[in-house]
Image 1: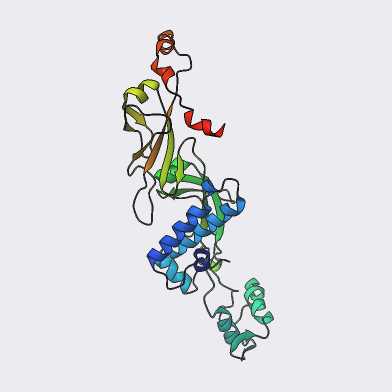
Image 2: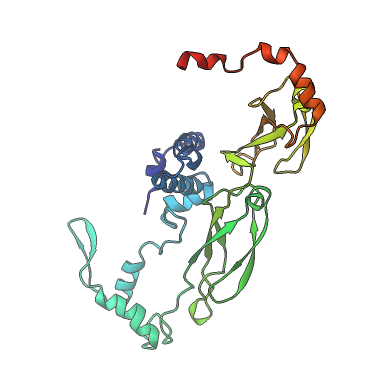
Length: 311
């Protein structure tokens, strides 16, 4: 399993700011949008996100450093578990050359699994090995707007049971949600394990996320681009009015501040960048054609002039 410190390339003494900077640098380098079709970059991007999820959360970082969870956030067996079992049950445990090592593990595993079937014994109450439920993992596809805005998403478990999962606002692709007590049931009334759901966010028809910013291409009419005016533009939070400056052209980029995605770590929102695309009507009317035919200024400029040096 990966060490999140090694994945982000930071020391164990790294500050929150160091971790944030390292994550952003690596995330930009390996972002799927910048590496289309590159499966290795996609896998690395998910690994980076998982490492950041551990280290950017003070409690998760503390638990990882203490050996309570691994680099994926899964629960680890308590430290000293095998030593305690060996000592308590007469197993053969020795200290050699400064390292703790087991000479014979067979007895321990027979106690854990053999006696669980009813062998009984000291420390187990005669009723078999008593343990909590095991964790389980699932993956869930979520529509882009549900992940961006937050909402409920239903998942069907292997046993046919359904759960309505609360997807937090600003959930990102590859993020893992923990469902406490929704894993495998424990033995002898012990608590069930947890379920871990890896989120896969579906792409949107026109919203393109880049980090916490949203990019969208907005079609505008010739009249709107030439004369300017207010037009309605969609955002993840709902439609807003955008002022298009007079004389705009295809490729003109306008910014809507704070209309991007929520960064759950900082609590800040990204921006939305709107790139204009001038679109003619499917069937221009006669007056438009008549005007263009007599428009001398339309013949006076060459929009391809800068390309001549390459011909």
